Structure formats: C-alpha cells, structure tokens
Image 1 (cartoon, rainbow, N blue to C red):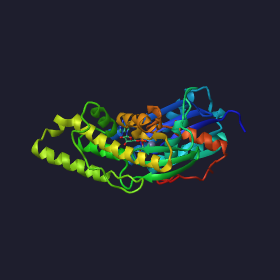
Image 2: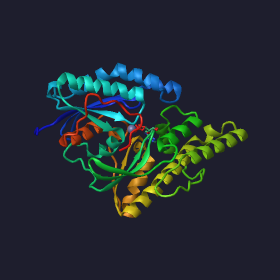
Image 3: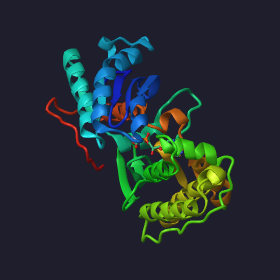
Image 4: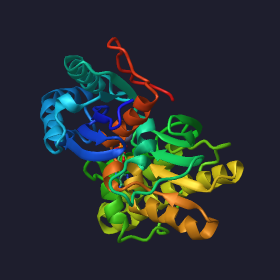
Length: 340
Ligand code: KG4
Ligand code: ZN
C-alpha cells in the first residue's frame, strides 16, 4: 500500500466543470469552472452543459494540477462522478477520466455524486478541520435531491428519508423563477431574505408520513399567493420582495428541520450534518446551529466551497475507495440515476 495516495477528482454531473487534487485526505487544489451560459435560459440546458464541459475539462484539470506540486505522473488514481446527473454532462467527465487514467496506467474510481456531498465533511484543509463521528445523520439538500442519510462509515450509507416530489433546491429555484429572479435562484432568495420578515406570509406545511419530504404543494401555494396578490397590485413583488423571500425560505427550512428532528428522535443520533448546494443557505445554516443549544445536536456544516458542486468531494470519496481497492473497469459508463 502506498504511503501517500495522490488522487485526481473530476466532477461534471450538472453545470460545474471541476477538478481537484488530493494527497490522502488533504485537499491541495479545488478548481471549479461555473457555466454562466445557463443564466440566459433561467435554468440548466443539458446540451449546453455538455458542450461547456467539453470545452473546460482539460483547462480545469490542468489548472488543478498546476496549483499543486503534484505532476500527473505522481497520481495514483482518477476518481470521477458516475452519477446521478445529466447524462451528456457525465459522459464528458467519465470519458476524460478513463482516457487520462489509461494514459497514465492508473486505476479509475467511480463516485456517486450524493455520497460525495456527504463525505465533503471529511475533506481535510488543515489540521484544525473537524468532522462528524459515525454514525451520523446527514441532510443532503441539492438542486436534484433531498435526503436524510444515515452514515455508518465512510462508504456505508443508507437513505432513510427523501422527497417524494421536488428537491429543496428546486423549491428555491422555482420560487425565484416565479419572482422573476435570475438563475440560480436559491442564492438570490437567500440574499433578499436577510432583509425580510420570515412571518410576513405563511404557507401550509405538508403532512408527509415518516421521514419523507414534499415541496410541490408549497410551490403551488406560493404560485397562487403571488398570482392573486399581483392581480390586486401589479407592483406587489417589487414592494414585498424581501418579505416574500424570507417567508418562502422560512417555510422550506421549517419542512427540513421538522424531519431532521424526527429522524434524530427516531434514531437517537444527535451527530447531525448538512450537505449539498442548499446547505450554503444562511437561514438553514443558522437554523441548524440553533439546534446545538435547543436539542444538544453536534452540528457539522461544510465550508461554502464544499457545499455546492465541486470535485474535492469526489476526490475524498476516491481516497476512501482507493484504501479499499474499490476500482472500476475501463468499460464503465455514467448513470443518470444512481442510488447508493
Ligand atoms: O449541490 P448543488 O450545487 O448541485 C446539485 O447537485 O443539484 O446544488 C444546487 C442547488 C440549487 O438549487 C441552488 O439554488 C441551491 O443549491 N443553492 C442555494 C444556495 N446556494 C445554492 N439555495 C438556497 N440558498 C443558497 N445560498
Ligand atoms: Zn450536487
């Protein structure tokens, strides 16, 4: 077994082309090239995402390696996102990873993107980096997923609750679209919410059994509220934007927190982590941190740069799979849908 393991991580599942270089669990570089083109369309256009990945993948990998003193010949494996995600976008990363690894005669490691979000907690930036202890519960909230994951070990995870319709990120993005805010909407709602009253408008909380989530009813009641209010006053959104954003954000956070409380109560686990793009939301972060005092939760939230899509979270999974010699073959292909 190598003493030091150098891994290159590649992420291309949606609209970020990303590469990261690791030495064991230490992040040495983390390069992310976002795709601004989607702004003009109010959401990610799959075809354009694939083309942008194709253009950016080589420069991004080159930059990730240059930012370190690791040469490509020093790499021990290439870890890549196999899924879930946009198939055309994934194909670019998977094809690049396989070709690059083949040229270097090193193995490839397939990574589940959602597992990457969870293990982002174990990315070591410096000696003070802290992480949750096993077992812990991780609320993974992104543009495509909303899951409560019971994490038993680095590579042993079980989804114990998930959304039955929209994801939390989708709820943010759809609400933003209704308000005419630019994509990606979650960030915009977060910004406006900071100056608004979260109790200005109320929305019904869905009654979903067990640890499931639902956001489609919230989206509909939000749409109706805005539509009816605009019919009475065409400048309703402009006059109330901060309050509207604070209220919808509050409703989404309420749904998420309630189910995490239930999951914690049912499992007896108070080691609680947050992951995925929506965990960049400042309201959600502070709501979780409040639970430290209220419910004695031990709360873990990754630094912002590891919340939204990045390749460091892919490389860290790659590292733990490398230790177990969990390599993929050169015939591997991406999966748009992929469970743990
Ligand atoms: O994990 P991620 O980067 O990509 C996916 O795997 O989907 O998550 C993207 C989602 C988008 O829906 C985006 O609006 C949301 O994360 N997001 C936020 C914030 N930053 C990103 N939602 C609310 N507040 C934020 N600050
Ligand atoms: Zn993601």
